[in-house]
Image (tube, rainbow, N blue to C red):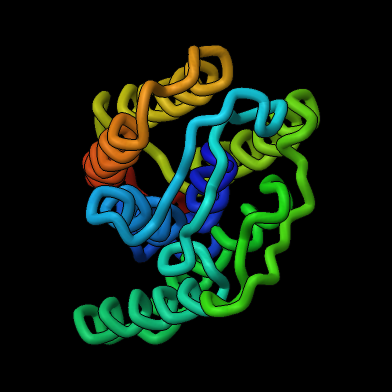
Length: 218
């Protein structure tokens, strides 16, 4: 899942406006931001196998440290604790920890059985929505559209940048999503990792957008 995670983060702004959109993006995509680092240092493994699923050519051979439920729980707790020590806000910390954890459960619906619950156990789970391109696009698209709507309704632009910025970000995410669907498979694991690291730019863009928007009166 890709834009679905961002959709959840956008919608979370409606629940609590205090954390920046950048921080919400960082939490929702945290384990996918760790994953390319783990690929590069060789402790996790992915293969490019066209036809592995209808939606993606990637075979997630092993990613116990970033994507097993056990470690996702650890990352969620650590993320929330770090935020709490910095901001001293328990409510926001719980929200952000929940966003980190939400990533695994959203992935559970789309992945074929390759997600581990315990990193030392061979049991792997996944409901396999990626076996249908149409259903994947519908589900992810709805999450993204609803999240975007909630964000736009719960905030307003302070200036022209705040208005142009959010629409530019949303369109950029949608374009990247379409490119991922219709482009040729990546040439190597290294290329996948580098593309994954580029997602930090999306987080940076979200911080910039949020600085130029304020919460609407409820």
